[in-house]
Image 1 (cartoon, rainbow, N blue to C red):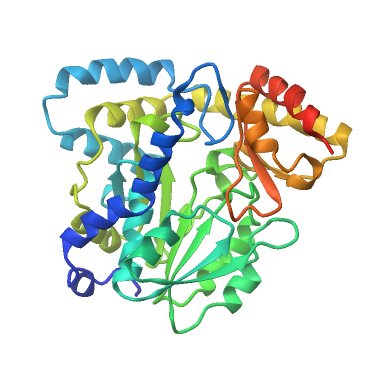
Image 2 (image 1 turned 180 degrees about the vertical axis):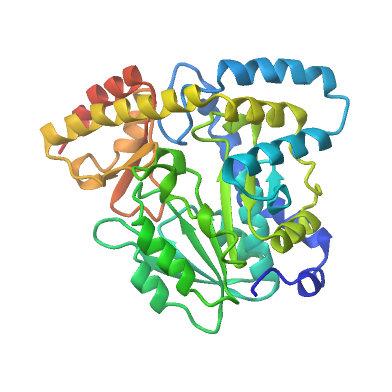
Length: 374
């Protein structure tokens, strides 16, 4: 059993945990928002943070307005209601769910756990960095396994990288920023092969966009593998990035430890985001619409790339990972001057990432970036 050790975890102070939550990715995000005031400029086309251009849904908006009437109350009842909805959808026990103010809180807590225990995080790379950043700040070591030539997580190399020092394996599937996903059967086999004393965190932020559909989820392994933790968010397909709501699913023991470790004791999410999440979960037509429009937006870019001979990974997400070599080396700042924001992380050495907006926005993107073809 590799469930999170209560005694060892609680040997480190909760005060340290609270400070770490604001010292790593969270504080970096705050600094980024201060510097990049343009992100709130409605005149810009924002294709840089993988936000859902269609949300919140009408039902979510209505739920938020109604939630104002109970905003003088703590959100305990809504937390339990959301857990019951998630549990029913995934056929698990509500006690196996931890609700947070965004999935980054959960990733930060897990990274801190490994760091405070002076453990090692094994991860594919490049990937969503929160768990690594939080872990390293807290004292963890990190072993990074680069994606293969097809920009996919290399499960064989990851498996070979497991040693007695490995405390946690992080897998973002579909992966951000590479946009690819691994074969579902292969990932299930990998998770089963991981030693039971090693935690496995699978971040499924983009699972609804998966080309495999929800069948690509590792949810079916939760009751089989006590060392598996699945993290999801309402920020992407559900269109609630600004309301900050996410959750983890794992063994009841792991969930209890997350609850105990979390500075907010699971009441960090307010009544508005909880109500919005509940409403959107009961609105499958909205999710279907978002996924369909996302595919439509991707096709606009794919068609342009085919015409231009631009190589890219086939996306299983709400963004496209594109070879930078096809465009001007300063294409990111030049596109910003043209009113379109796209992304290039430092570890995206040879690539840029383009989030999928509304079809009209993707048409504008194609028209603008064509100027910077090389």
